[in-house]
Length: 241
Image (cartoon, rainbow, N blue to C red):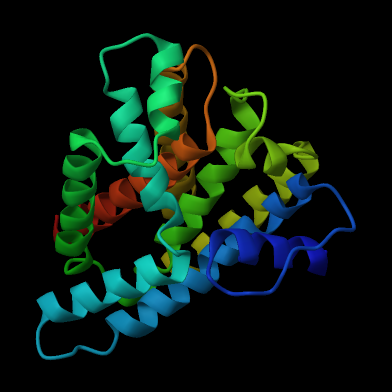
């Protein structure tokens, strides 16, 4: 279990714990919500500082968010914007997403995503903020388990090896427990869990059709980012509604 958790942290964050080699990489998915909890605690701690103004505090929180993850999912989001929004055949979309150069859709998408997070971070309390990256990493599990992989190889394919129902159920249980501790309402926790999962499945289904029936690691990252943005938006509406 410790080796799997080390792999999850090393893959999803800049924390250099190394990769465990006792089991297949897919076992690490169980620990993804715990990685989200770690990131969420970092964000909550930064958001609690109340430095100078809400705008600056939100910027520093966003900066910690990006640094802690090494920009991993942002990179996937940018590549996904370039590929999924291109008016070409699915095979060509997959080629575009492998191109290391950022196109216009990637630039526009990343600007809007980061701007949206910065604005919404000013509306969410530090405690509730903890749940956002947890839900984001839970939906990495959902996407990797539910959708076939669009390529024969790649980092996403490597980490899916060994992913099955035990890992999914373990990740789901951790996600629910963490969100319940944060939201402190059973109904609210269930709604957050169900709606975020449905959102990821909806966007994932659209993306899979654009790519010929499957997803890639880039799209996993994009789903994580979009789920986090949607989570911030939902919490902002709830708190200010």
